[in-house]
Length: 147
Image (cartoon, rainbow, N blue to C red; front, side, top):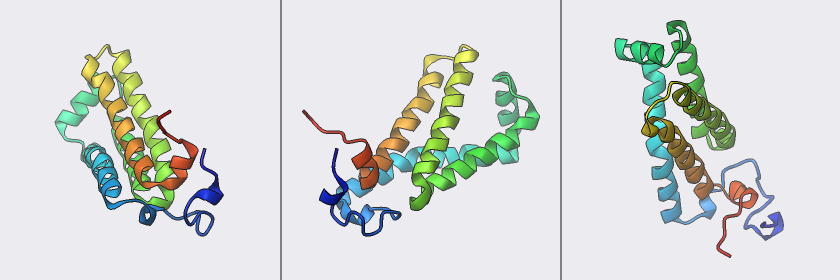
């Protein structure tokens, strides 16, 4: 694990993102990695607020009441917006992990095809991977290194 004293600018402003301390390539990779699932989640959350017939029908097929759709959409949008704000990105990632875990559990419960079960897992990996690439605090907490 990297000690805080060995990290550049460690301790100078621990509450802010450390994007300025990483390479441009790494920053862009993190943005692409995070951006793809974030766009999908924002559209998904927005559609849950609008409630077109296809969303209502799909939600009912998964065993949820129509009255739950807007609430699920609000939770998804709040969690995604928290993920987009650097100061609250880790909280957003934690909340989105719970949301995506619920999606996995739902698809397992209804015996969905494997792709529908794995899709939220892939999104979770992309969200956390993108955050890890751009946040030195997370890299210090979860050091991935070749041994």
